[in-house]
Length: 404
Ligand SMILES: Nc1ncnc2c1ncn2[C@@H]1O[C@H](COP(=O)(O)OP(=O)(O)O)[C@@H](O)[C@H]1O
Ligand SMILES: [Mg+2]
Image 1 (cartoon, rainbow, N blue to C red):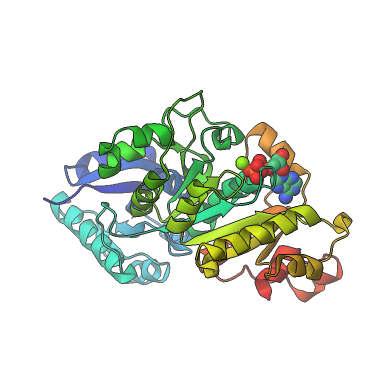
Image 2 (tube, rainbow, N blue to C red):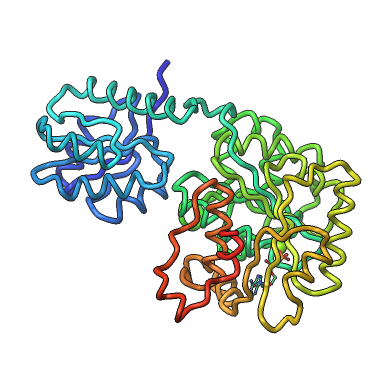
């Protein structure tokens, strides 16, 4: 049986969208939302995560083409199809150049339109080398954040990295709090979740059913989904053997799974590391923390953890720390992959429950988070500023690291 395709419908007026929604909806096509032509279309696409976005081109096609272009930047997870009033060569050409997968004619019978949408989706997935099976055969990247102790920015960085990944790639992102049992991820985002990691693991059936599992996650900022630690006191423990299957299942449902952990390297963190595609080892530029971090990395090598998957992130860098980058690398006996700046706004952002990348997107720290996200996603760094701006501005350390 064919699966239900989730679609977002974008067009010029609410009335025409409502009519079209009614005529198109059927068992194999669910219009999950409608949006007017404009920047809101992208916001809706990010938050509703459709498989297909249908952009309706009524009379003029400049705006539909512009919206199509904004929806196709950066190889997003959805497939964009333009629905035209009639077949016009110039529209087809412009829609294709803007990144649409197909141009369909609105007067075609609804059955034919639905079949054409499914074909466009299949062709798009085939081009990416994926299937549309949600049972776990398409594995997303699992990115974990670890560190020798608390208070070094694991949670803050997890949140901002997850939001940056969603924004920079337009792909699906899950953020998981494995700082159990007292993780503060949901509090940092001001969320009121109903599900939790514990609840997801309480019933073994949850891991076998993508819908049951997704019910434990709640909506976070920028369309990310959050699987929080339990908010109340709990007597249940999570067995480290459950970590791999949980993260594996989530990676079957999301393109990126960002995992926040507790401080230190116990059996539990080792299980997270084992399941991760990439691990960010967070540290701060103070002697004792750096030395403990170096010990931690040596410990991981002794456990035969493949340290090539490990990248060191030095957080809260400022000109005041008195410790220079060469000294940091020396103490760690490791190259530093990324530097993140000290930023006063970080505390404020946590206090109001809004990630810094949304609250202060132009701050050096936010630029640093985005730079890490782009590299983890395999995207090129953002374009350098024109040379003359360097006369006025210093490039942030994170960008320098990215460029090197
Ligand atoms: N780059 C930064 N600049 C300023 N403050 C930061 C930065 N990163 C984290 N913080 C602050 O440090 C504190 C601890 O951060 P948190 O992410 O909770 O650490 P952890 O999860 O490792 O315990 C928080 O108050 C947070 O706002
Ligand atoms: Mg934390």
